[in-house]
Length: 286
Image (cartoon, rainbow, N blue to C red; front, side, top):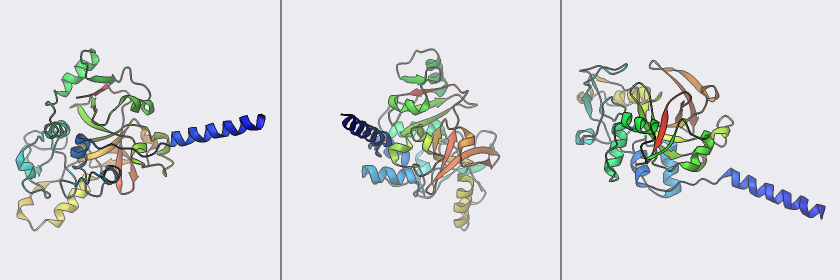
């Protein structure tokens, strides 16, 4: 009898370990089709999404989608795709200068608004309105707030791909939940990432350490095209971030283009760490 219980216990432990390992599982959605198509062509999340779902999604632009403050959808953005159009900046920020020329891309809300337009959703409300509704518990579309969120690794039980993280910052920020590293079958061979396989992954258009050099290289290849004369490089673009990981846990931490970043490298893809500690945020389901 003791031997039976010992074997039975071993079987249960083995099954639990297998269940805990979690097979990669990503389901195809219209939102993910659109959002991930704005990553760079060799992005590991885009490749894994295609491999797991058979979607066959192709990148819209040759080197990813640059960030542009105030960048909203316009047909002109895609006139030269998969190369880039350009646009004059109309506002001064920490990085952008009024009257100077930049590659045409999205800002964070412009990116989400374009996804909504392509998938038949209503236009995203102002981020300040969503955050106000979350703090006053007046919106049925708010799934969870920073005040009542469970631990991040358990938050995945409440989330669906396509949910939006809306975060209070200087200009406020929005990003789209796409699943977890476990869902994509990525990061398991990295000891630093193993504790965070179930933390939220989001695609968004925001600060990123790789776009400056990537766009510099792209512009060098097109230096004979007068259209790109005097075009300034961006300090970000559409990328994937993992939320809530401590910066000290990341593989890399340094300043790029005047901004400090923490990030991991998965395959050939940079995954930035986006901190939530001490910030007001909510998850909004359209």
